[in-house]
Length: 122
Image 1 (cartoon, rainbow, N blue to C red):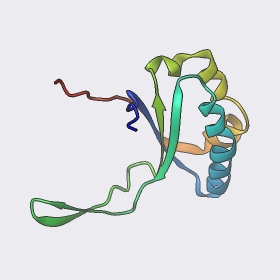
Image 2: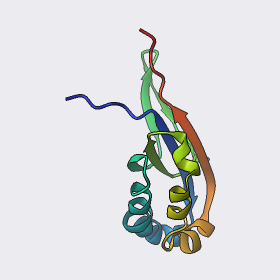
Image 3: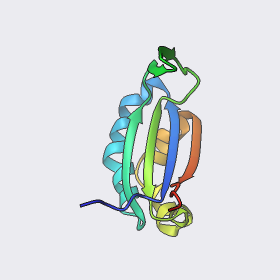
């Protein structure tokens, strides 16, 4: 059974000070994501770590890229609507737990981008 694709995706990317990395992962996984997943309109959250090197076939050759200036960690939030991000529930959830005091001040190179699904015209 096919599922309806998520119409909106929030990408949050950042670096974290190395001495806070273990705590970053712990708080993200056990406090921050669960709090945000309880916000109405948040369908799913997925976390990723940037690969050091990207090897990809383009034009018949393998090309290699490195992006050291790009943030190391990313979280992708599947949203029903961009209005979720301005809701009272979201506002409360992003401040819950230890995230605001123990992690946010130790992050850098932060990026927040909202993406809308492109639906082909038929």
